[in-house]
Image (tube, rainbow, N blue to C red; front, side, top):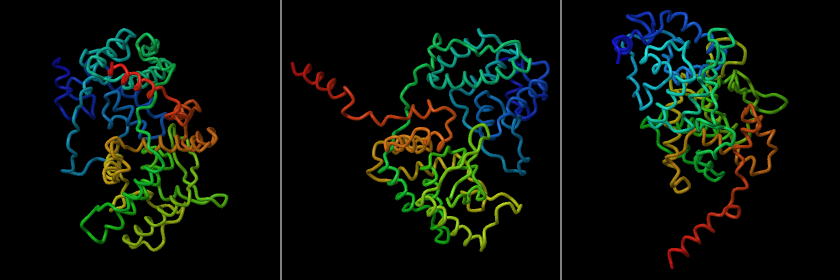
Length: 385
């Protein structure tokens, strides 16, 4: 490690202020680079997208999405660095005192080889390269760099996206989704009898919303104002990737789950009539903490894992693989199995390309359409000789 990077790493202030100490190793004008990065990220309306990209590139979140200053003494514990912590692009460049604006395709290839050597899976490397290519594509368009060094031949790198792999996401059935909803209602969440019903209803409403095919980032961003009636139907106004909005129709079971949860929440908070749409005041999250704040994705992820663990035999063998995207995945696969029009499913879940929706179509993959039994029979016959 260079002395410059040691200062960059050791001084906590350098994580939010690039001008501290020796600043950014290899970068003579870190403020200018920071401005370029902020300009790129500002084109993404979704705060979750900005934070995800910043994290993937090794940038401090405070640089690109500053929030209110933390309360005195209220500092969260440091996150575990993880095996790829030092291989995020900008951290990797800093270790080599390389200004990212002069990086070449050879540098990007060396970085990809380092990721592979550290055990990064192909999908991880694909995703990190895609993020880097999006950044440099923007920098090239604005004239900040001469060309995009991440615009590489992915087939030669073993990262071809021409033929998509089968999704590794666990495939949940309609019966398993029902088991999750039942478990959400029956689990014990607190010793306080005053809030026990609230927490159970919140868990049911949360799982019910996931069965609509929502992304977890979309779900945590929903406000009560986003639930309304139009054309005689109850809908959710969902803000998806790229800041694009879509209307998601709310079926009766989901509507009932939300109605019960919101009524109990209002009862405990003493609000007899919820705030009306468009009348100002602070925005109220659709799914909220006991204090009325917005739930974090981490907390909701953990809640779903807890529900899955308590769902009984229906989730045996897969409970530890259940996560929010698995329910989004289930929405698409079940819809296609029920012969829903693929264009309708694409609109429901906010896929930009119908090819993405088609990737989920595994409805024809049944026992009758696989050679697995034939292979197993051949192996059994061979071992009996």
